[in-house]
Each structure stands twice: as C-alpha cells, then as structure tokens.
Amino acid sequence: MPLVNSKILVKHAYENGYAIPHFNMNNLEIAKAILESAQENNSPVIIAATHASLYYMGGVNSVAGLVKGLIKDLNITIPVALHLDHGQDFEIIVAALEAGFTSVMFDGSKLNFNVNATITKKVVDIAKQYDAGVEAEIGGIGGIEDGVVGNIVKADPNQVEEFKDIGVDFCAAGVNNIHGIYPENWEGLDFELISKLKQINIPLVLHGGSGISKNDVQKAIKNGISKINVNTEILYTYALGLQQYINTTDVLKNKNYDIKKISTFGIEKMKLELSNKIKEFGSYNKSNQIPI
Image (cartoon, rainbow, N blue to C red; front, side):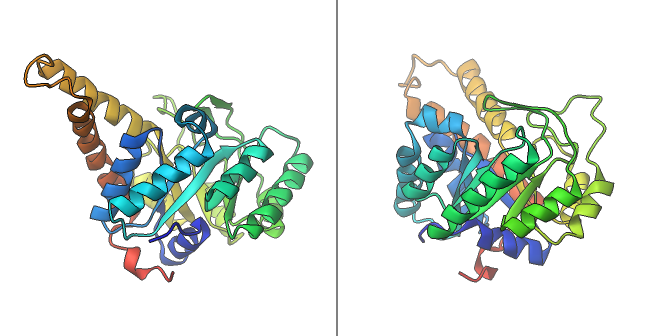
C-alpha cells in the first residue's frame, strides 16, 4: 500500500474515539520495528522523523526511500503515513513534501503568534499542492525532543480556533505535556483545558506521549486527542534491549558480535512496547475500517 495522508488517519480516529499512534524513527531498526508491529496489530500508523533524525539518516530522501522500501519489501498492507515532526525550517518542509512525506508539522511555537500564523498558512497552502496534511503547534511543549528545547506554555483556545480557520488539519496544543521523561513533581495534563479545546472541533495531538498513565491517555482520547506521539519510550526500550544483550551474551562466541543479531534483539524489545501503545491508544485492528 502506498503512503497515505495523515489527515485521513487522524480524521478517522477523531470521529471514532481512538488515537493514531505516531512513532518517531531514528534508524532502520526503529522504522522496521514500527512497521512490523503496526502490521501485526492491524493498526494504522504514522511514522515520523524530526530534523535531527533527518540529518542523522542522511536527509529527507533517505528517510522517505527507506520507509517506502520497507513497506514494499515487508509487504506492509496497513495504512502508513510519513510525517515531518517539529519542522521549523520552511525549506526542509518543502523538501520533505517533495520527497513524499504525507504530512508535515510546522512548529512556530517560539515565534510571535502573528508570525507563526503567517508561516503556518504558507505551509498549509503548499501542502495542499502535495495532498499532504498539516499539523501546527499552539502554546509550548516542555522538555527536549531531538535537540528542540521547549518550555511549557498552555494553549490559548482562541489561537487554536484561528489555526483551524487557517486550514490546519490537526493541532498540537500545549496542555502541560512534556517531551521526554516526566519528572516526579509533574502536575499532570490540564484536562480542563483539553475539554475546552475539544469544543473547537479540531483533532488534537498529544506530544510527549511517553510516560503518561494509561488512565490519563484514555481520558485524553475521550476529550478529542486523536494522535499521540511517542519517541522516548521507543529509544530507551531499544537501548535497554541492546544493553541486556551485551550484558548477557559473550559477543566473541558464535559470532554474537554480528550487528544483525544484536539489533534483532533490540527490535523485538521495541515491538513489545509498540504493541502495548497501539492497544492503549485504541488503534488495534482499525486498519480495515479506514476509507482509503
């Protein structure tokens, strides 16, 4: 199946009370784990790359080619979208669209709102030429994501309304969420604000999906969260898997140093975590229900 527009997936989730899993990729192994796990769970999925992962993997064409190639070679039949996460450079956004990304995020959260809105409208206009979806950010998401540092700034519902009018397909609103590992003194998601934003009738995106309790995830989905982003839990699950392999295996015996053996062990660990997230978000067995 060719890549699909993210807004089709998110719209279906929004209308049917679940959330699309957005999983960040940083290398071949993570991309493979994401696609295989989604296929095994018959779940639609958004596979995403940040600027940092683009640079690490070679660029937009390398990433798009890898994902498209894996979909074909692994016989992936579930709906897959390829998303640019936290795009801050207009030229990279255009390059991603030209390479075949099916949605892009413009993160202008550090800009003056009027400037943010102006550039976001520009992104919306060009994305239409590629039949691609657009995500934008209102407020600020705390923590650090692939070198992008953010402070918690709660979204203004009036600004979310304006972004809906601009033509944004789904909105990442600051609701006291954080990228990375949540500290012990975190006050939790602002469900009162999420409930207000739900009234605007635009699909909402929850960044910082790693570490939020299952109960809070379910509550957020009931209040309009239709896409949940996960990166940190994928990375540390992979890292812990590799660490476990190295610590429990004599790498000098039986060619246990073979990177394919080591990576496969990490992939299987990631797939368990990804499967849990798919079920938690409610996207399990939803692929055949999406009109494509």
